[in-house]
Length: 220
Image (spheres, rainbow, N blue to C red):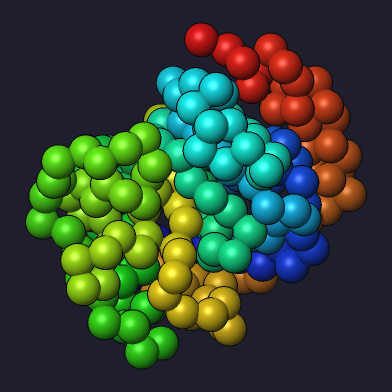
């Protein structure tokens, strides 16, 4: 197990893209223990990394709702995927892990959960030639692949509050019990809860003032 204890939020209500990104930031700022959030999308979306370009995301998926992530990485299509966030407060020893190693550890757990669901997956051993800015066309080291095709990737950000790890699992398995199974693999002591009214209100305001603005989407 990675964590001594873990809070699970299986966020079953679909949300708009800006709200989903805002909620991750709200939870990161306030978490006092490791937290797993699994969430859904109210409409098809395309996310792109903090240093990415809105124009590239729009060219890739012009019919989808665009959103800039706080983490890095490439362009990811959302709607039919399994999306999750792992938040680790700065006080946790896991935050001392080097970025590549923390990525490997989390993806090793994800791969185990997928195998238990019947998927034949493994961790990628290295990056190939970059095919495009689409995240799932480019497997980097420790991504999860099935028959050479990337099915799970993620991006991380280290902040003064702790570690934010945002991941997506695509074209692999359904979402049945994914949240519970992943939580139990991350920690032997898990406590499930719902989002609070204060968290919902804070994320709604942050989506309005930051993630849903033209300034955020178009920043360079």
